[in-house]
Length: 455
Image (cartoon, rainbow, N blue to C red; front, side, top):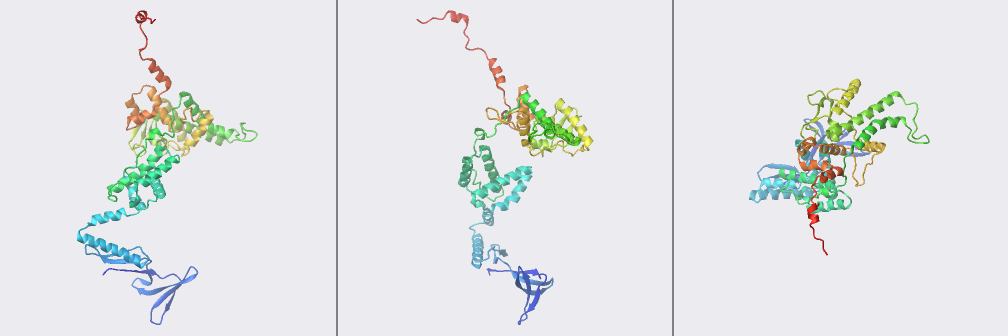
């Protein structure tokens, strides 16, 4: 017979408890708890003395559709609420017996009514199986949590396309760029598509939320550096650390050389300057992304190979494909000098990082640009940042006549259209090309001589 009850819980006797007996022979444990006294029934079991307390929530006991005895927690503290939950389970069992629904359909419905955050651990494991980086996984979950919090999506059944669309539009009206908006949309859609594959959802309710054209709303358009700017930046990167420790930057003696700078401080500043110069140079000569360069270890640099190169592991590449990046002779020379310094420091083990790439490299580069006298934004509001060095790499290769398919391989892009976004053709080059077009508008002398002059 189906019923609900509070299940007895057997717990160890609290330390310092006093055992008292009543007239009917029952025993109780009395102990202090939070400034007051607490009492519970005392019993002797085969595992030793125990106190007996009632569970906080009601437990349901019934027979399911398969005839199996079931005992499930209702999660309810109120008896009437617990009985209502039990009746729901009994009705589901009757529907299965009558053939109205199947057990699989019932399980699917229960999964669909589950809380969204309960599925995050399994979703994270799915992303890891797809070789997603920890940064990407963290960013995806953060975006999903932000959407669920603002849109009040608690259960899977709460996911509504119109609610998400209104939220995205409100963010767009507040100044969010199209690319960022699309990332939020993509994150929650990836989760929903996974839920459909796991039969948690029967369909993706957010699939119809439109994607914006990010190319029409570029918030951070980068530009390639000129040769003069490259030289200035590399020089500033090398000199600024030493300048910062030897020149007074504040007060009445501003811009004057300071005295009493210890030798080891000067040596460390010079080392930092050389490393920063090499970081910029390596980004410029290889087209590596910042995070990819940060993953490179000493053992991944092959300066004595037939074709000197840097080996990029698949797990560190954005495309999740390994790559061999050939090195420029000048970069090879600088890296050999850097290896001499690393060897003196005892940091030449294969697993030692090639460079200590700071997470604040963007901020550091902004200061280097100011020191070099290079404007971060040009007249067209295009910016120079760390990733602009990758744009510069692609642009220089294109200007040197490298075939577009080779350029695509060098950039490690799957889509040629993406490669073309990185090449910034100069106006002078376009002008030279246009100048090579035939002069279609020039008239022959004979035609001019025979022309009839109107009266």
